[in-house]
View 1 (cartoon, rainbow, N blue to C red):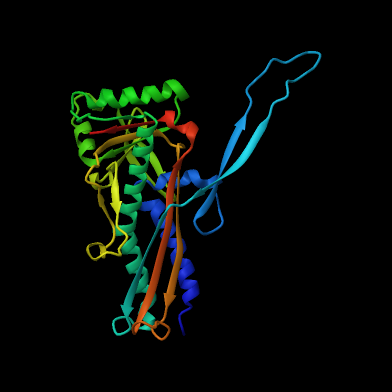
View 2: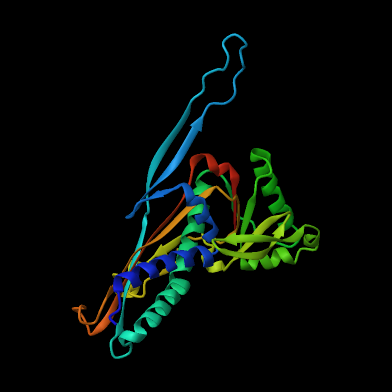
Length: 304
């Protein structure tokens, strides 16, 4: 029976979107996008709610009139990335195509796409936080001081917003230094943490989950190759020459809104592919991250 390439593309697209949420270390940020309106393409609408505070109640005139304003702010997904692959028809027949193509796309996203999405998000947070004066630079983590540094940052946020749920995103080498602290055992525990449908146990400080991230994804600036010039044909990304190492990002869980959409997967059969006798798979990913203006006081970034 001929393969329904349209159905395959739709199912693959849904699976790849779920994979990002489950496997990206920053996947939990996409849970904050539940109120974001996405209708396709490279635009989303983010709700912005403003309202008045309390006023005195008057026994003759009753309540003081207040106002509530809900505006939908349009934002563009600036990261428009893609790649096309070909599977030779001699290597993959029609019966094996679905399994092979699914494996190829899943591996491509796991090893190439997800690290890039993580890297973009963390660099964007660090850059924007620095612009708002919420980043400390020049700190080299040490066992004697790292714990007090993190707790100091946490209580700065608590002092502004109360004891709200926080999350600590930390590079692997820095996490190793933290766990070498002689006092860490008193404050360390284990908590449940969810990324999409995946629930895991993670280490925590004072109940704050620690998300450990490979250091290659924790830089303040990256070069994202366009794949057009000869030395960039492999695509992907590398740290910018001016990039700093991010020690950690401490933030309230609802401060960042992340969106990634596989838009779209296209599949061409060998008889349709004009370029080669091969299955052709087009992959396109839109993604971005935003921090609303009133959320920056709930973020603290520390760089080396």
